[in-house]
Image (cartoon, rainbow, N blue to C red; front, side, top):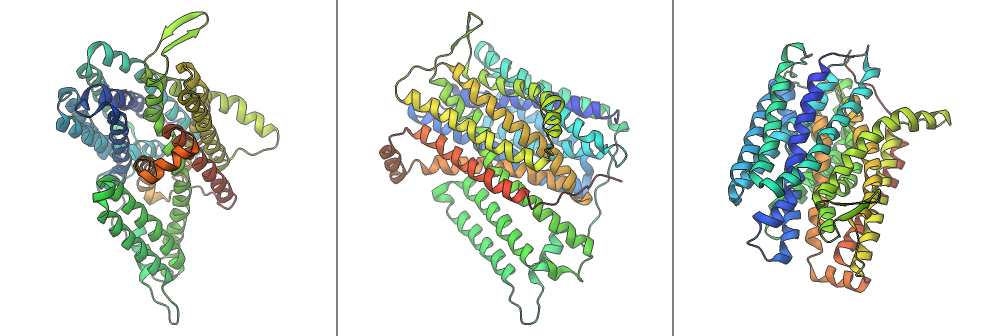
Length: 512
């Protein structure tokens, strides 16, 4: 086991405490303090909009961080300097607790810093391994994910209490201190890391191979792939033109999705035309990346459900009774503290799955592959939203409901997370061609951006009179309808993902 991994894991634990500490109190802070100028009925919806816009930023900037690291500064330098930007963002949240523009600027800096380093820390862990010890990598990626949730657990438990007892300056300041400690710990291992240098300018890069494939002519053959790519570009322009109706964030993210989706499909249709212009290895690498992106696209419904535990589920918990009976004793919890269940269960489920569940399934003659775990995880996530929807329907019928009822959907959701998210980190790294580790991990993060994009689109759609009329005729409340809709969305994604998994051919791209 590479000894230097301990610095990266310790850094990740502090950084995740920092991130989840501020993220998990963001929605309740917005509703109770920063958005008081809005009518009461509009605050929860606007807080969800701000939260998911922030999440979109966090998981969009990995594209920038991955590109800078792969092409210019390397992973270590990019992580270190963007970590300082991250610290500055926390300072803004603490200083501008009552200033809307200053607070939102702090969120922007955190999105830039956190998002920029997100794909790099995980791939930097992978760089510490080679073919001789790659079998240890899965354990470290699991340990990596475990420490993420270790930090998240204490942040979710403590920060709502600090917000209530000491105010937003302290509650947002403590995560900033933890982020500064994370940066120092990461710097301490500088001379012990394996540093993979950034790739030099490549005449056979992904974009150049894709461009050659789209523009290459063949006598008597149409360039249908180019037409598909142009159609996507026109759709992206139309999406941006609709920003006055949908808002800039939805329009810009929609434009990016259209460019990537139709550009990727078009490139795949004509990719063989790049052979002869570029080496076969470069063309095959592009084919591998396009196949990976299909997997990432099919994971986006999981993220649209998972991240709403910090928005939609908190809004639901605000309307529940906050006193629970445990072992004959009465305890009162804040709604935001319920999120501590998720990392606590992750810390239990990861070792349970690796030491008990997966070996038991293997002894039954079933191979527990990465894609099978991810398929099952998406289905578990959908099931969690069926349960949370049933709870919401009961509340809409006037039944007083304790927050303790959220424990069951949290448990199911967490099993889905462990099977999808923890597995996806190692899958993304192992399948990425050597010269594209950072950018592929960035695309993995972009899947989370698209997940939040679905949430913003659905939230905007239910404000239209036609949709509201349909929901009222269904006999369900708006929130319950959305919950069942997202559950059906994820179940459909699990079916398609499982079908594609049977056709995906795994590769091994660890460092020699």
